[in-house]
Length: 428
Image 1: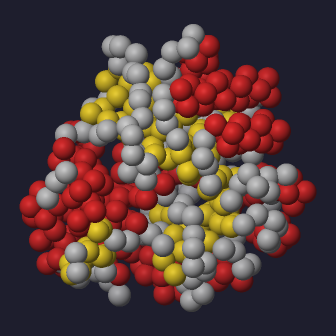
Image 2: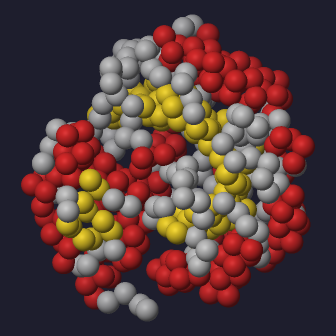
């Protein structure tokens, strides 16, 4: 069913508000003095580790990465462990660790050493890690038992035409070959998740539906269905991959996916699980504050976004000198923080008003009365029993907001990414 006028206006408003907010308020400035982070007693934090290496680059991916060099990677992991020790000395403790990339399993022995070291330092109970289809051999994954609780595998599509367009068919195999790989790893780790992308130019309803049905037939624990994110940085390479085709079926595909997830229940705006207890694929929703370790990682602490050095040599030199790796920051105003937390909580499926107010020392319904009123008018949220819950349409609005947020974060990546790496991405 197409969006009605009110719904279309709400989506347009959500996109415009998020883009304007990021353009006006995401003012990242170089730090003049070393950032000395210190944990607050009683606060809960999440730990993020970035592994910025890939063997090959994909045309749609804007994440911070470098072509893999084993010698460089060995040095890098050593400095990451050094930074972890510094974080421990700052008083932080964590129960949740998310490892992203890049290709996180690109050097298994070094990742194992790093995960073991992190667990020896902190009270980590849950570890989520990303991978691609080339790093999921059952024998390799068994080495991570007791270290990785949730493995997220970037499949993107099982359709060979799409895979060829985005440069993954030659790198990772056909859709059928990827299915065979996934079937072999069932039960190796506690939770297996796969990522699919929808709204590629020229993608049809049949392709989207077939991807979703195929994923469910593989008996995967979790399925995440991301909308294609076309930042200014990646528009050229995406357009080139699809011969300048243009189409936008995002909402139709969103409806189609949610209607086809018969065996799964939504756990946020774009992820689904068949488990009662699940580890979330998006840590920003369930963790309001987090510490980022590694080159190009972000931290969000006490209302301030911190950016670690992107350049590998600069990052490693700072850690070797016992300095903070943070090179830039952006302080959020109290209202901006409320808006950010409201967006991530809504995306996660529910806003508990009293808890929200106590955590941020605010009055949500007063601070965001206009936004809440508009969302109610559009039928995007239900407000009752002290909770704000997105409706089916509201889940799509939260997806739009999160999509625009992540797309806007490319402004930061483009600002600090080394020029040589940036040129390689742009010219894919």
